[in-house]
Amino acid sequence: MKLVVGLGNPGSEYRDTRHNMGFLVIDELTRRWHVADTWREKFEALQIKTTVGGEPVIVAKPLTFMNLSGQAVAGLAGFYKIDPPDVFVVTDDVALPLGRLRARREGGAGGHNGLKSVIEHLGTQAFPRMRVGVGRGDEGRDLADHVLGRFEAGERDTVSAAVLRAADATEMFLSEGIERAMNAFNAAEKQDPDPAE
Image (cartoon, rainbow, N blue to C red):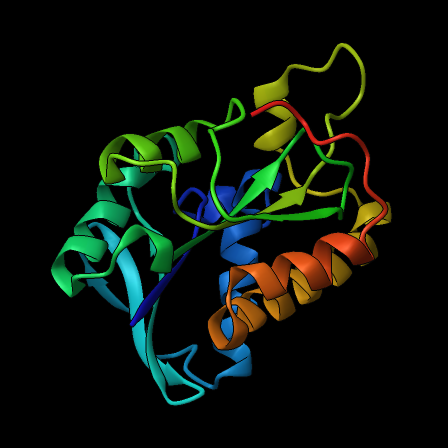
């Protein structure tokens, strides 16, 4: 069994904000799998239990707000007895240009409070993740305002394409593992030097 978690903030006021990139990817996956209307609340998260390629998968969106995401992730992983290498976290990343993907087998939080919480509550950095770039925004703009802001009209095509690619990468992780997803999707992206983690 695997757990796929998109990080974000609950509530309509945060819908389609940069910080909710993880939620957008989860929504795309549930749409593809025709399970988008089967959400249940459990362990401070909305979750769906389904089967993908014959394997049970839990997809989840924490209801804890970003900075406490680890509570929901650890609660679900503990209840379903899912080890960290089988927990796949999808999140936004300001250190990557808008739309850029970066899959990793493990790593630090890179300044992301949601990942920091997941690391703290799982007790390890050794879980795979997909970071989806949202850029840093205009120089001088407060970073919190940037990540809590909605995408501009001119960014939407790039965001939509990134969500589709991130969902593809997640499906590859589920079917073929993180190494294959990293090789396929990291190589396909034009890479800048990897942000410090």
